[in-house]
Each structure stands twice: as C-alpha cells, then as structure tokens.
Image 1 (cartoon, rainbow, N blue to C red):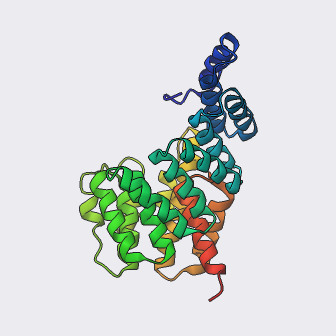
Image 2: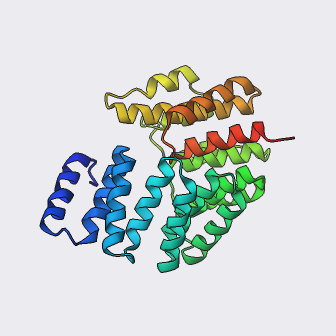
Length: 275
C-alpha cells in the first residue's frame, strides 16, 4: 500500500479477511485502499463492516470520513470525525474534520478544530498549514502569514508551503520571500516549475508542458496543481476571468481532497458571495 501498489494491497487485505473474517483492521485497511482507487462505495462498505464488528474501532471512522468527504458528503464525514474524536481525540481527526468544514465554507469551525490540533501537537505541520489556508480564505490574512511562516519552519524545503506563504505575503502587500524559502529546492523536480513561474523565470505554457508524465495519475495531479497556481497568479495580476476559468477546471477535474481543489472552490465561492 505504501509503495502505491494498491491492487496488490487489496488482494492481501482480501486474503486477510478470508482468513480472519471477524477481525476489523483488514476491512479498515481495504477501505482505505479502495478510497485511494476512487472506489468510494466499496470503501464505505468495508468501513461499515469494520465498525459493525467493532463500534470502537476509530480508524474505520476516520477512513470512512475520508471516503464520504471525497464523494461530497461532508455532513456524514463530519459525523464520522465527531465519533472518532469522541472516542479518541487524535490530532489527525481534528485536521480531517477541519478540511470538511473548510470545504463547506465554515472557516471559523475549521480554525477551531485546527487550534485544538495544534494545542495537542504544536509541531503538527499539516494543521499549521491548513489553519493558514483557513485564515487566508476566512479573511484574516495576517494570521495566515503567521501560520504559513510556521509551516515553512516545520516542513523546510517544501515547495508547496513556500508557494502558499508567497500567496499570503502578496495578499498582505509584503515583500516576496519565495526566492529565500525555495533556495534549497531542486527546480528541475516538480513542483519546481511552478516556483519558477512565480519567480518570473517560466511561462504558464512552459509549466503545463513540464507537468507531463507517462503516469496518467501523476500527470493529472500535476496539471491540476499547475492550473490552480497559474490561475492564482493571474488573479493577482488582474486577469480575473481567466483565473476563474482555471479554478472551475480544477473543481471539475481534480481530486476533491487536494489542497488545490479546496482553494479553487473557495475562490469561486468568494466571487459568487454577496458583496
């Protein structure tokens, strides 16, 4: 599973279920594997069985929550995260629930969950990063800059964290720190071309060309990321219509759990909100 060979992982989990059909973990693990393949109905079925066998098996609630969120059923995802937190308040559960709240546009509840995650573990970089995004789209840009600065300290040499800090800096009219935060990143590797775009060294067309990969799954993910960041840069430069078109393509074509999908969805909601 960790090597990305999901079909063989499913075969092993299936054999484990055949050998020990009353043991919940193989169902919970296969649930996660089906989720990775995008087969959310089978994922939910397996997590249902794990929970039937053991209603206190927290990983099954977390994994089922991921599947519900991926198929756009955020209320049921939140209900699963609620139950997971009731049983065992893990940092990951608060972080996952914050993403569902963010997707619903409830940035305040997302931030409340992330505050709790960071209280439990101040070094949990994902929570700092996600709170930065929630603050950014919730309108508290100064807090977003602080959170994303902290995320960059916790996950050094991470181009995505550096790009998001640059976006927050630009919205705060602060000087760009992108050249500094990416000075040790290999620009020849993805998402180096996106960083180069933001540094003024590549064109959008060149970034999309660099997104190509023989693995269709990797190519699709890269094109989604490129489309979002090109759109964001266009928005900053006043090309609103082009940016909105790119954001719509991300929401239509990209994985719902990706950061870019959430951000593109938030941008489109902001445009349609009453002024």
